[in-house]
Image: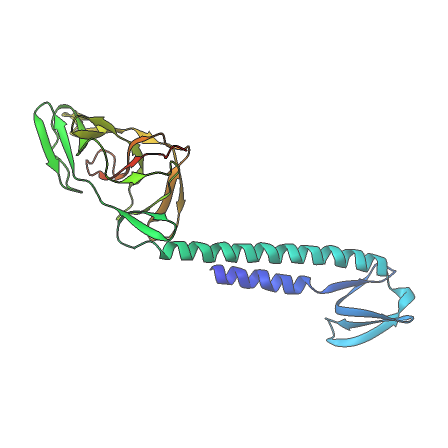
Length: 258
């Protein structure tokens, strides 16, 4: 589709390059080019595909030149826009090629690719702790609980508080960046409320405001925080609300003091 649109724009620019040679009576000839030769104006007629001549005093050269200059400026503007769009498209394709197609979370440091490993999560309730396998829903119980991952601090250290991440989705789900709360030897990813009557689970992650850009039709997105992240514990998360299938890729922000 894009190639078709580019072809149409290119054709339009080529057509716009033709010049309206205005006559003093207000009519015009559509010409490819024209030359003033003494008291005559010689031009190549688009309609008749041949060179022709008319007396110079029958041609409104001022109007012709003014409109031709404006048209040329428009042509150059459209060509620049097309060139910038093609450049941006090539840059996007080059960026996408750096990211594996396997579902997961990645980030780039210069040209070096980093892979965030998914953390193993567990649910803590007043009845104890149950470890969850990725994408394996938990039987619903009544009461409240928390989704947690091990260790009070992440081993994945990010020094850029505006770090961009790439997430390749395995299927269409919600995703984003959540702030985690250290609690003893674990970090809380989200609070949970189990509703026994409807057998639903209300999930309440502490989500960070993010910006996102879809990088491909295959489920690749780039995400980054809307505002710089304060030092602390975070995770890129992917989940279907209420299904208890959250995947967690944890990291910590530790900015370097200057």
